Amino acid sequence: MLVKIERDWWKRSPTGLTLDIMSVEFIILLMVIVTALAFDFTNGFHDTGNAMATSIATGALKPKSAVAISAILNLVGAFLSVEVALTITKDVLKIQQPDGSLIEGLTGEVAMTIIFAGLVGGILWNLLTWLLGLPSSSSHALFGGLIGAGIVGAGMLNVNWEGIIGKIAIPAILSPVIAGTIAAIGTWAVYALTKNVHEKHRENGFRWGQIGTASLVSLAHGTGDAQKTMGVIALALIAHGSLSAEQVEMHGLPLWIIATCGGAIALGTYLGGWRIIRTLGKGLVEIESPQGMAAEAASAAIILSSSHMGMALSTTHVATGSILGTGVGKKGAQVRWGVAGRMVAAWLITMPAAAAVGAICYGLAHLIGGLTGALVVFVLLVGVAAFFYAHSRKQKVDHNNVNAEWDEESNSAIPADVRQPAVAMAH
Image: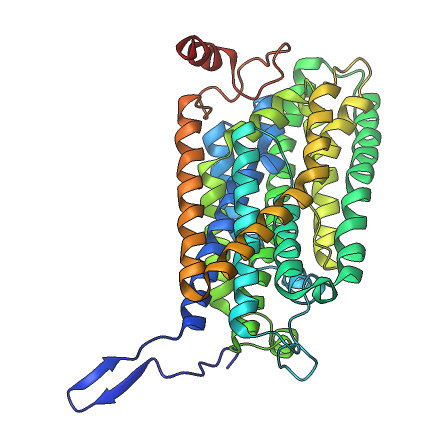
């Protein structure tokens, strides 16, 4: 068995079966799993635009059809690979020694609280950037939260800096540049090869091609981003003592982890992060279907390759780099570098900001202590999430207005006809 339960859930008494009192560690483990699935859900709607923004913007797919296809393929992709999940279990935090025991001075409760606080940091950053329509990296938000909580809870030496630099930081820098270069070359080649084809026929033909390439990006996204949450849950089970890193490497992840994480990211994807879809599809480049196909093909190739090698790549960085590359590769294309600059600024502060939130959450949980501390942080998470959601309803972006014309003056993901009434009401 891959997962062994070390405590009896049920004990027999003279009056029959009664539920045994669960330990604090076990309850925190359940909270970590629930919070991890919540992060996976936010990852889904935050990153839908990576796969489908260009197809929606060019009209290759209707918005609701696009997110439905993406959700199904994200779920399928979750079952195709566990390499990235293995990276998360060993290349971010050091919690387990080679013999399977926790590192000296670290208890299961502390380790799981670190993971829990890191997840909260990642979720809050995801929700904030979604509200602002900024395509920041869900992956880096998660890593930042874990690093921040890990430093406060266990010390600098218990963060795997070598793994973070090699499999997270360097790919984060190189991936958008590589994706942009490939997409630019691909876009130039597409227009050069089809220069004698009537524009109407070219657009229609590449719209059909976009359905295939966008679907491939969605499949690739499942092989990468869904795995990250699987790795976090496995890390929590290792901290609890219910799973060992050796078991994961030899036998893979338990099926229930794969199924629940795949389902959570698929559900989030289906609901659609329309604000971010709008920014990627309309805010960066005035995109045509040949550009969309080139961007998606470049993104899919890079994400699938990195997943195979176990690199915890940011699909947001790849997709954004690809879209910008298509603007560079097409002569006369309009690229909104101001929007791109805002996105890069968000990329630069994602890990430090999420790390700060993760550190604060761990500090608060530790200050209060035990299960009560973790519950207080959980309640705060729910409260802040509810506030962000309520605020988003005041300026709603959905499948009905995701393709509205971009407002050059505001550079906002909120369509002008939605934003102006809200501004008038504020005055």
